[in-house]
Amino acid sequence: MPKILIVDDNYDMLDTLEHLFSFYQFDVIKADNGKKGVEVAEKQLPDIILLDAYMPVMDGFEACKILKKKRKTKQIPIVFLTAKYLDPGDRESGMLLGADDYMVKPFNSKELVNRIKTILKKKQMISALKQENEDLARKQAQILHPAAVEEPAPFRIEENFAIDPLTGLYSKRYILNRLKEEFHRAMRYELPLSFLMIDADGFARINDNFGFQAGDYVLLKMANIILTHTRLSDIVARYEGANFLVILPETDVQGGYFEAERLRIALGQANYIEDFLLDIQSTKPRKRSAEVENLTVSIGFATYPMENEIATEKDLLRIARMALDKAKLAGRNKTKSLEKSE
Image 1 (cartoon, rainbow, N blue to C red):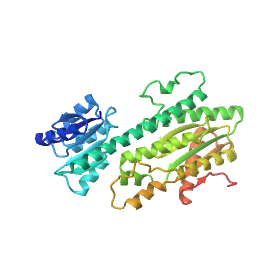
Image 2: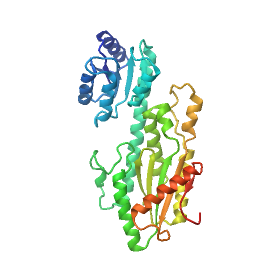
Image 3: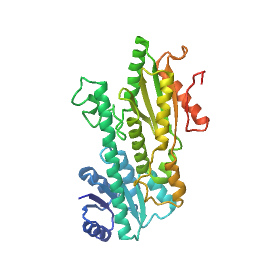
Image 4: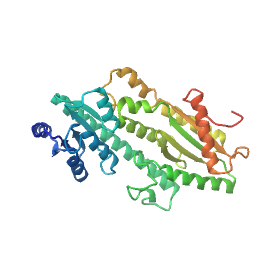
């Protein structure tokens, strides 16, 4: 039974919403202002929060801002339901704070319940995809760290700086340290080493048009595709935003380009819509859906050795970033390096 937290200062509205969601088999908990709502959310950890915008003590916007900053509550979906803030700018403000939907009173009961159920379904899809990513990453770690047979160190605890909390991939901090290790190993044993920087083209439009939950799902799907199209010996991480890094040990220029192109094509051919985005409200649904359906990536890659231009792992990162910029300037949806032979 899903648990919903309803936050509203109008007690008649609280009772109405409680009866409505109880009828549809929800476990209902309530709070009558934003401050209490934040406190209850931290203690009860509901599956979703229905939040009024205009309330005494603490309004819904401030409550949403706080909830999205706290570790325990930042992943809980929030839906605004308000009779006061009706301008398009108010809706935009709520969505920018991380809300998943914004509805106004009076409302259609069936529509409200259906939207809540849809968001919960999306949340389940995100959780399932994240778990799949974590399982794939765990298998990679077991190959790379065979001594840790049962549970590699990065996966022993949830709060670990080695793991990106959204995608389940390695984190920026981890991969930069790992890049240093792999670079020193390549130098010591005179082995080639390739490094990819992958960035989704125009990703900000997805968050703007569909909301952050849809953006998170697309990032999870991208991470899943990268994991399933790389070798077990490769190291994959989320760097920042919609930017991913891949270390390709013992891979020369030709091999690096081949692996990068394989990833670019796979990511560009993926279906990011599925059932997740089919019901999204939009003034231009076909045009906006196409922005996700036609999502492409640009890739910059660098390979050691490179005519004495790469002396440290920082050079490898810098040159990969420059190559990514080159791919963007060339029209996006391309793989580029700074090799003179290109």
